[in-house]
Image (cartoon, rainbow over all chains, first blue to last red; front, top):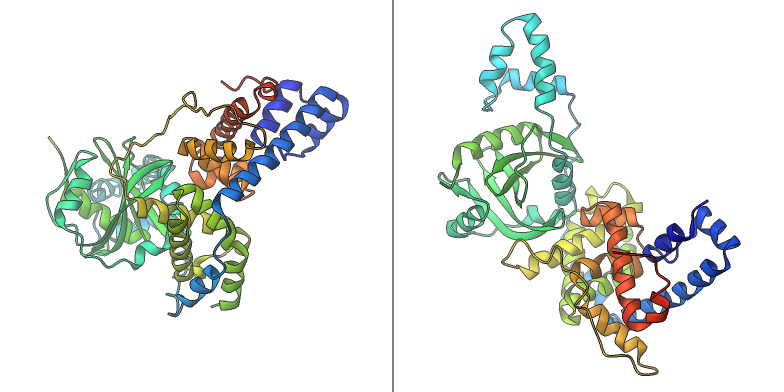
Amino acid sequence: MIDCKKFRAQKLADPMCRDAAVKAHAAHCPPCAQYAVKLEQFEQKLRCAAVDACGDMPPDLCERILAQLGQPPATGSEPAPRKSWFAALLDKFGGGGTGTWFAPTMGAMAMTLVLGIAGLIAFNLSNEPSPMARSVIAHVVSEPGIFEFNEDVPASAVQAAFAQLGGRVEESLGQVRHLGVCYVEGKLAHHLLVQTPDGEASLVLLPGEALEGGVLSEKGFSATFIPLPKGSLGIITRSEREAHAVKARLERSVRVES
Amino acid sequence: MDQRGFEAMVRTYSSDLYRFAYWLSRDKHLAQDLVQEAFSAAWKAYDSLRDKEAAKSWLFSILRNEYARSFQRKRLDIQDDVELDELSVSVPAQGQERVELENLLQALPENYREPLMLQVLGGFSGREIAQMLSITEQNVMVRLTRARHALRRLVDPEQADADVDVA
């Protein structure tokens, strides 16, 4: 049974909450039941005010939306199956022309079987993807239009965006097809779409914590991070192999401002 | 491609999206543009929407991102911790309460107004709002509590006295 304080806190956060504990408390506590009624009345007024302020949606808006969908949509790519850590590791050993900065470490680990096994475990732990990788993938999934852009973004704008997080682009990243701002984790971040020689990559310049770690693959995308002095560079690609390759490329291209 | 399904989605959610877009942008014309842009982006990626049950929150998230893009704000660290103390209006005259509420909603800092509108207009749960805003559910609940208390304190101070400590 919840007490009056918890009841009121729950109702104030969600006046229409009708869960069993809330109902049970209201049933035996008349002052709180009265409080809930008044709060629900206030909620009705709030909703009316919120709806009235917008006015009616223009009646032709739906038709305009449907009319603009003349072109067939791009076919969504099938999500890449998530690889096990072992499969990912085999990819790294295989190389495939996508050598990463981790490669020397991996080679050393493969020298002996015993050390190799221990190394595999150690690698898997140290290469744990940042929890934020899930957030940036979710962000890209919610912003499907990003891959449609084909603008010609000036290098100075790209440089300015990296400079905000203390980074400097020393070698071309590839063709930057878009640079905009988006909300990620409640903060405004610069979001780029870059056509690199290793494939298409969505980059997020995320202010705040310097994140690092391995690659997370889910929902058809793979994500990883490069730490910067004032935040992180999130790399989101359509495959794990591309994520490693683009990361290696960016680690060569982006330097920290001194 | 399920064109009919998409059309049904447009007809079902466009007015909810329009209202939410209005409260993001506080501009009716921009709100219309945002809804159009959001559906355009959604159409291009409709095949990637695996769970049709999640269509509504997916559309709202797309619209938020279209808004962020259109707004093109220069600063990255915007009003994350704006407090509600400065929120004020004159005491509402009889019959003007709704207008005052509208004005107060307009004046509410964005980090409080946005989750409130997602709940009031979108009908989303705390967990869904948390996913959309990429913040914790607890943080969502705190923002909703504080936003409502701030509004009640100004519109109906007597009732607001009955609110729990929301500090």
